Length: 334
Image (tube, rainbow, N blue to C red; front, side):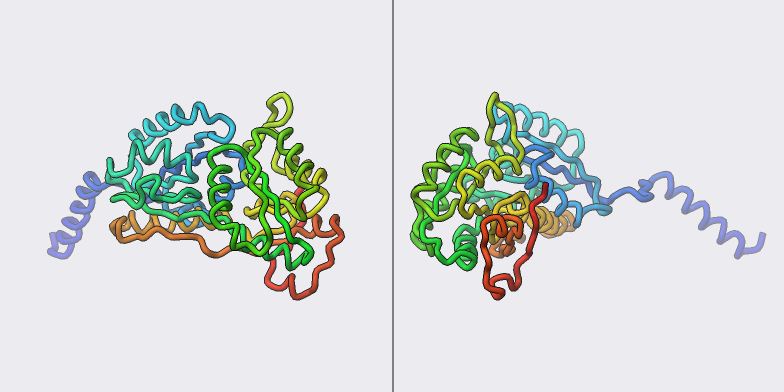
């Protein structure tokens, strides 16, 4: 047999042998990522985070999602987190993304923080991250900041007569975090702030709104997603915003992009999509070899100026053209 032919055969059989021992990747994603969401799959904030995650990781990773459903069923959040840890052990991900505060306290802190080598990136965290012992040896992420002061300033550009601001927040962990933020910084706001009203259900929110209408020029709604309606029903965000806006009859603003799309007037909004995308980019760095302690915690200091044209027309607001420069204009999603 000619020497050249022997060489070809040797190479062919060598690759055949290697094929037995090397894993066949084909089109398989090189990394596995487990995403722990605090809330429910239908929540707009969680949907935005998921969009951001997939904009970065889709095609590069195999992703599994777990929803702890703490907005609607907080008492079972711990049990859902325990099941998520069982899945973590079975799935053996290369990285974890944990969204919002409940995913930290119920899942990352008891099961993963400094207990495993798997890199973990958080997003959507409102509380001071030191509360969770972050940064940790295997944990970093992006801190979520509500741009309350900036949103009030944008509102005053639309409606210069606004001098006094009221706040209604849900009496849950996130609502209380917002209250703490406002209590700590409201003296620096460009309008006088009334004390934050915490409410447990939509009926209480309506009552508070009617009372605050007499004492304020505008209303900020915070963490409304977990509000229950009559007979323990779960109204949609749009229903909550429409009900409270109708009763208040003056400008009502929020802090999230989806809140403006669902009917509130304006915001310098934080974005779930941005939170998810940033955490994903940070996780990719960790999975490709950057030690987590070298990936610093990031704070979202940039907001998106948004105005709902539908709400603006309903209130009869006619802003100066310069106010609309650089603003994303949206109509209410029905």
